[in-house]
Picture 1: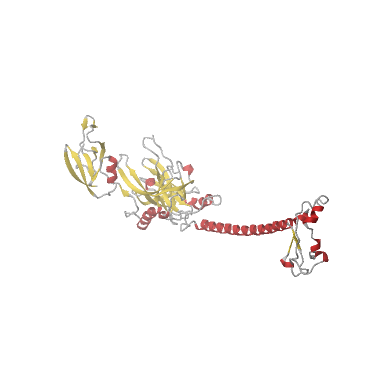
Picture 2: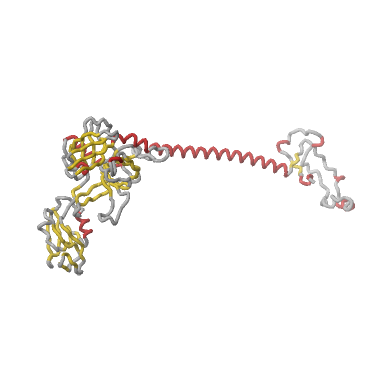
Length: 450
């Protein structure tokens, strides 16, 4: 039955070709041999195929094929096979092109990523690297640890210790001022166990930076970075002697949590001692880390570990991962000044003396009676800050009186102690301000030099 699916058509590419045999040649139609409708009827019962064939009329020779033209037999099955082969070839070609394009794209992406990793994502390549399996913190530590020292001191009241680092090849060491404050003797303990006597050159208590010197130290100086270029999220490590001298050389890893933070240090009386611009880090810092270096991932010192925010003085509130370091740019400015002149000339760094009024006070509310001292009650005529104590030797001594209610500080309303403190911190030592108070039902203005 396959013959029913065959149709005789010309093949363009074979029109001028020579027939292979006589059987391949088309034959002219003989009108006499054409089956007519009438003859077909007589054979209906004897020829089952004839019953399926339609009746045809006489077909003339229309010259579709000539004896010079070969015939080509076309079938659906053969054409489908050709189509499938063509599709397979096209698919293979398309897959090859796709593979080449995608390989090229992946190559470009990997090349760009490699460049970014090598260059440090910008102009900070000298400071920042990606920390991961291919980056060895241990190698970094090995390259700097010998230049980190323990600073042991003896005072009239006992002994203590902190950390420090080698700043110059000729034995100058930087540490915190509070580490060597009131020291009668200073011993530097090196990473190799040597104990060498050190001399205090000078320091700045306000900035908490000091310089000591050891002769014949024989240790390399550490590279110094630029703290102005630090970025939040950048990895850093601290090396020092926390808690006990047996933990000398301890290493902790963290990140830069904040830059140029204003940190206020208060006296035990609650008065502001000073304000410092510092680096905030979550690197673990403990007593004894003071004076030790904070490194970036290029092995450069970017800060001096100085303090941590541990919580409230009553111990009912505690904080974690709130460490602070002096900006190395400030420390170097002070250290260079001390090394050059043998003493500190002052006015270096970013720390400022705390402005103080020298009073004890609390918030009061207008019309609400309050006991401000045993047996002493007042009903304020305004919201403000009531004075409950005045300390001798401070700016307000002899100018304010007990139970004055401060309601304005240099022209700004101060309904709470927090608001008054905020206004006070906007000023510096030496500024003159006008304080307005209610005193015995009267408005009084007082001029105070901070």
